[in-house]
Image 1 (cartoon, each protein chain N blue to C red):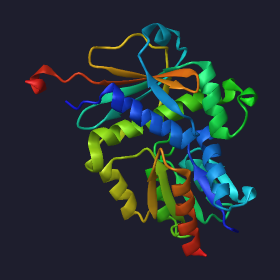
Image 2 (image 1 turned 90 degrees about the horizontal axis):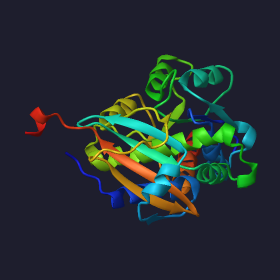
Image 3 (image 1 turned 60 degrees about the vertical axis):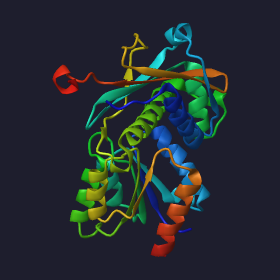
Image 4 (image 1 turned 135 degrees about the vertical axis):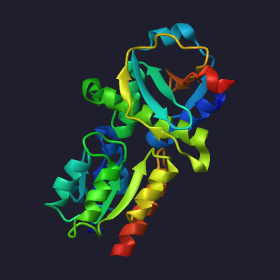
Length: 155
Length: 127
């Protein structure tokens, strides 16, 4: 089964934030209490040689900053009802695309689904890997969860 | 630059972000058009002359590959230049799109400078 460390997941997300929204982020120690307060989540599924899901969890404040940077306006001018959901779905899509490229390389045969809003984080399995980023004062959590490999194939 | 560009992406916020980059490449705002999926893009192409389509692939209603296939089927639209701007990484799908005559592709996340260069290259060749 492919492996993706939390550090590599953080690197991919930092690059996505820098290139897409000109936002700087740094990895920080995973804070499970803070993760529980993240009220905005989105997921994207992928399939191919293996399948899995990439999920982002964050807060309104992070999304306001993300949307502002994407649109090139002040955060105070952002209507989260209009742009918050779209912003987290698009960032999830981009991070998901980076993950499948990391897993598949130049010979990638993975495919990515459409990003979807999801309920706030409800805990992760033993297979999942999560990183936490401090992005301009706001926390962003990224989880990669490969699907379980059937025992018959894992043997 | 007196060319028309059509941005096709299901994310309104990303369309606006790409639009900023297209303007940096020297295009006037009223020459930059937007569509949320392939079907909307075809409707725009039926009424506006478009020199370059910046095309996302994973979209609802009509995805980018279906749009590219439909474009090549139509004699009046088959020569429109199309550049993929997507998270797509599947080499087989990208090859199918190249076979349809897609000019180039850019993987998200991309450097804005790379998109500017690509737009200038494609439109420069057309002019």
